[in-house]
Length: 76
Image 1 (cartoon, one colour):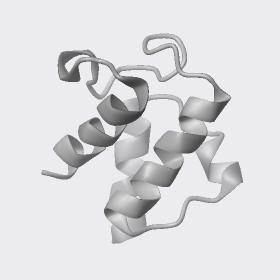
Image 2 (cartoon, rainbow, N blue to C red):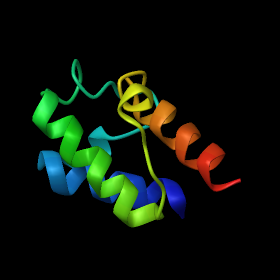
Image 3 (cartoon, helix red, strand yellow):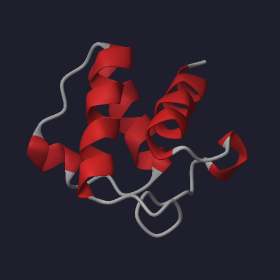
């Protein structure tokens, strides 16, 4: 359920197909996300999951799987 919510955020921001978004997908290399896209994804994640992501943490997230792990850890 949570992974699907994350996928929705990414799909909405980047306008990509849901099938392109899996745990191994890299935001920049695979989805072509730039820094503004990443910022919008971070905002979407914060809103969807009611968490806060510090800028330093956001800079360490390179894949969808890493984003998902961060969400899970932040909600524990």
